[in-house]
Length: 420
Ligand SMILES: Cc1cc2nc3c(=O)[nH]c(=O)nc-3n(C[C@H](O)[C@H](O)[C@H](O)COP(=O)(O)OP(=O)(O)OC[C@H]3O[C@@H](n4cnc5c(N)ncnc54)[C@H](O)[C@@H]3O)c2cc1C
Image (cartoon, rainbow, N blue to C red; front, side):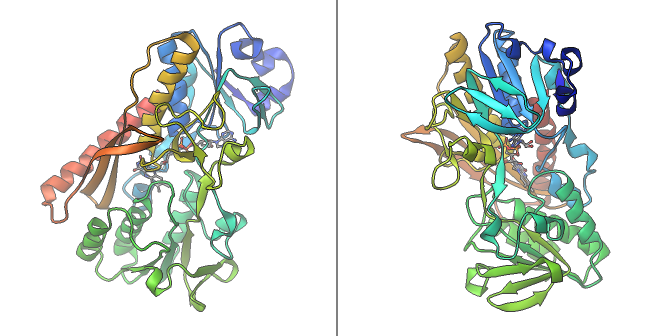
C-alpha cells in the first residue's frame, strides 16, 4: 500500500488509508520503520517483509514518489541510456507487505521511539532503520550553495539534477569549457566523477569535439585512476585535463552568477560547471543525533546497528562502517545483514555471521567497461576488506566488452532486488 502526504492530510480515515496500516493501529506485531527508500532502505524493507512472512509490520517512509538511480546516470549523460530506464516505483514493495508512505521524515524522537513526518503523521517503532543517503556541505566549495545548484548542478542525487546537467552540457557552445569540481573523500561512489567525465567526453566527441573538460580535484589520487587515465588518452585525445592539488585543484571557488571558476585566485570563464561538494550523512541522521564529528553515523560492523542507539540501524552512504565504499551495491549488501539481525531480535529467527560484498563497474567508452570489488567481514570495530580485485590496464577489447555486459546484468539484478 502506498500512502501519499496529500492523502494523509486529506482527513477521513478511509481517505487517508490509515485504517489499512497495521503499524499505526498497534495490532501487536513488532513495528519496523525504515526512512529512505533507496538502495539500502528499500532493500531492508523488502527483505524484512518477505522473510518475516507477516510477523512484522514494516513501514517505509520515502520523500519522493519514485526513485531515480544515480547508478547508471552517467550512461544517461553519455547518451547510452534513457532517463526513464533509471526510474523505479514502489508498487511492488507495497504489494509485498510493506506500507509505503510518500512523505519526508522530519524528526526522530529516540526516547519515545517515534518518527514525525512533514505531513504531521507520527509513527511509533520498535526498531528504526535509516538509509537517507547523503547531504552536501554547502560551504565546502566557496561560492556554491544548494540554491546555486540550479546554475551549477551537483547531479549527485538522482533525478532532476541529472537531467539539468545534461541539458547544460548539450547547450555548451562549440569549443566551450566544462568544469567539474570533484569532491574530497569520503563521498558517494568513488569512481563516479571520473566515469562521468568519460561519458561527457563521449557525448562531446560527437557533438562538440573541440570542447574541453577540466576536473578540479582536491585529491592527490582517485579510484581506478590508472584505468581512467588510460581511457582518457585512448578515446578522448586532449579533451580532458585533471588538475590535482599541486596545480590548484584544492583551492577552488565558484561564481555561479557569472559562470566562472577561480583557481588559486585566477578567474576562468566556463560554459558548464558541475560542482560535487563535500558530503555528510542524510540530514535526518544528524537530526536524530546519530552522527559523530565526521558527519557520518557510526555502526557496529557485525549488524549495521547504530553505535549510538541500540534500536536503530544505519545503512548505506550515511553509515561510517570501515572499508566499504559508499555504493548501491554496498547499501544493498548491508541491508540484507541488517534485515537478518532485526528479524533475529524481533522474532527470534536465526542470525548468521555477517558477510558483505561490493563490486563497482565503470564505463570508459561504449563497450569498454572496467570494474573493482571486494568481500568484507567484521574485524574489530570496523568492516574490513578481506580480498579484492580490479581490472588491469591494457585488457583486450573482448574482455572489456564482457565487463560492460556484466554491468548491465548487475543493474537489472540489483534494481529487482531493491524494488521487487
Ligand atoms: C553518478 C553516480 C553514479 C553511481 N554509480 C554507482 C554504481 O555504478 N554502482 C553502485 O553500486 N553505486 C553507484 N552510485 C552510488 C549509489 O547511488 C549510492 O551509494 C546509493 O544510492 C546509496 O544508497 P542509500 O540507501 O544510502 O541512499 P539513496 O539510494 O540515496 O537513498 C536515500 C533515499 O532516502 C530518501 N530520504 C532521505 N531523507 C529522507 C527523509 N528525511 N525522509 C524520507 N525520505 C528520505 C531520499 O529521497 C532517497 O530516496 C553512484 C552514485 C552517483 C552519484
